Length: 317
Image 1 (cartoon, helix red, strand yellow):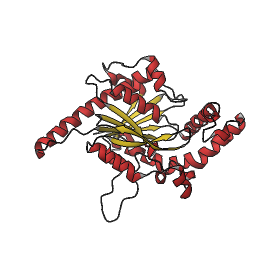
Image 2: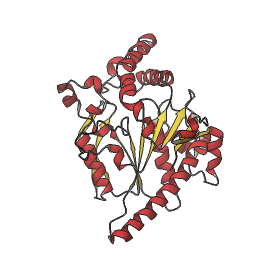
Image 3: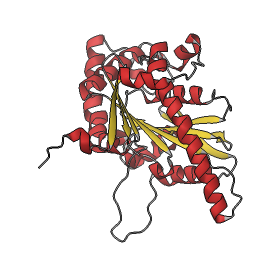
Image 4: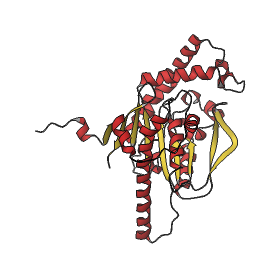
């Protein structure tokens, strides 16, 4: 009997960095060095080579996927004899705390908005759909913030459903990382984008399926393409601790900051505090809820400790 290795039966085609970089072909670099610096999150690594070797090939691939989806949409219109408005193409970006989701989402938005046909590209994070702290405290969920149960899932699903239905405009709540809470009565309006990037911890979460076969929508049901940012647990911890140390002297120093109490910690105390938070909350969420969703992504970007993407896995069609 013929022996087959894991790669033969994997739903993914895996590329080393150098292999993936070649797939850029003639895709032009449309970002200036200063813009790349602005797109980078705290402690994340993003330079021209990362954009050229990782994100330009991805931008090229997405341009092909979007065009193919639009052709399929027109074909379905012809089949049904309908005049539905063109549906936005939705891209999900998921992964652990400190994995670099925000940077990836912003780079994708910037690159996709500069395609020759200049599409309208919007970006939202699912943080805005967290329950307010008052609700989380009442329900005993403050230690579970970022876990699936801490989100107003019906509101998020309604938002995505309205986006896909072409309603305009659609409002999303705004989250403040300074006060660590949803801002009351503040919204961003999403008005019929060509492409919407949705970034969040649990965007690929499936949850339990009902025994009676009833339709249960998941956030990822609305995605046309999804990206998962991956790294080893030890690497994610080191990134989280380094970010905490930086924030201690910046955002945490603001008296309005929810984490202002950490501003005066010594280096040793800060490392111990960050590590304890990571192990008690973020690592549990990663193992129980986030990492199990990795195989549901269309594309997995695996990072090494330098923050550079080392490997790219693309789901086979």
